[in-house]
Amino acid sequence: MRRCTTTALGLGAVFTVLVLTGCAGSAQPADASAASSAPAHQGVSAPSASTPLSSAQLNQRLLNESDLGEGYTLMAEPVRRNDDVAVIGCPALEKLGGYTATGAGLDFAREAKASFTYSGSSSEVSEELYSDSAAKLSKGIGKVFDAMLSCPSYQVTSGSTVVDIGSEKSAAPDLGDEQWSQLLTFSAGGQRSVVKQTAIRTGNILVIVSGAPGLVDAHLDKAIAKAGAVH
Image (cartoon, rainbow, N blue to C red; front, side, top):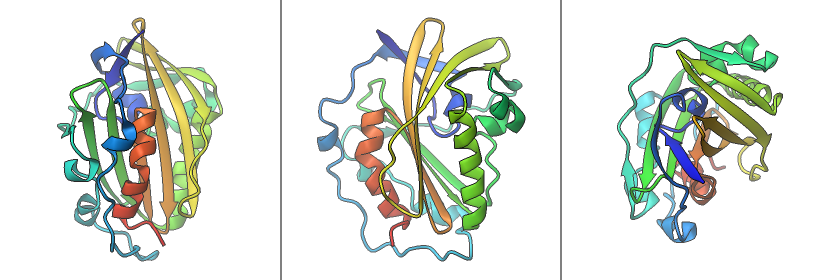
């Protein structure tokens, strides 16, 4: 089966998948554990729970190519589309509105994002960092994940593009104060892509790692450690 990857995977993957690109074979990295052998950053202090970090501070805490290891290339920021986004067949998501429902309109005080390809293949991984009050992060991300998981299948449209989406809950590691994880399957034009999204909140930082399931599992611990979200 041919798999079609997306540009800039993230919690906004439901939105960015509407610009399907880079269709290729579904080969995954031969050894995800080897790819993740770069040591996690140590000595990053846990953030204060009362004051959001600045976007500049969050950018410094994003994983980079050196952290991920050999074979990873930083992707350019995608061009945002102006088409209206609509959700069909999932009342909870429809209620949130297209951009909020797809994660493209998360309303948090500060954010930073980075996306990477692995060895020029179809595999991608992205990281999103958000900072705000613990209560606002918890309520905001919980609402989106709950809505997405409330419907095992639905559609998202943007202009003339229609994407069929399937969602299922995935086990999240016991990290931080709160955890969310899901598997999303996108189908459009006879092509299929599977994305794992795992979100971890500790204090006033929310870390979301998304992309090929093996890469998410391989790099989540490093993302949490560098973000300073480990007590």
